[in-house]
Image: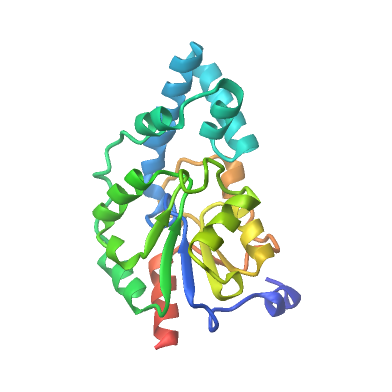
Length: 237
């Protein structure tokens, strides 16, 4: 990081609200839980459009990049029902997730509110948090339904979130695994943290999903969210 970038980097001493993405953020990338969802999305698209797996995969990834989620693309281009889509793609095995008491302890010690902002569903978030064992530390989950089916990184989604939960963006921090989803939060005044793979385990991600570590809208980068939060909690004590 350059000296100029370091001087512009936002800190945490003023933060009173901690906002977290869910998938690949609150649990390690290498769990590859999202790989199951990813496969279910491809199956759904293939069945709905009656196309082969290769074409379904192409459409899935094209819509993901262009619309923020494949679901939004399928809704916009093909009139898919969000309820049917979400019920199908989130029907996965959550057992690879293990309890993380260390992160729970760090979250408990962080001063202020904790919220989740996810492009997934509340039902999926509930299952993830139950497995991780620290869902009780979060005040609320703002999901794709609350976002009126408009996913991150749509600017209006962040505004809806901030308004609904009365969050002052200038006093909030946002944790995300996709750099593009931090552009708007940073513009709104939030301190931004990009959560990246620890590079010791194999992860299943697109190349573009792993980009952005040096982007100007990324204030901090960590490959160990538990340790990062523990350090923040200790410094706030």
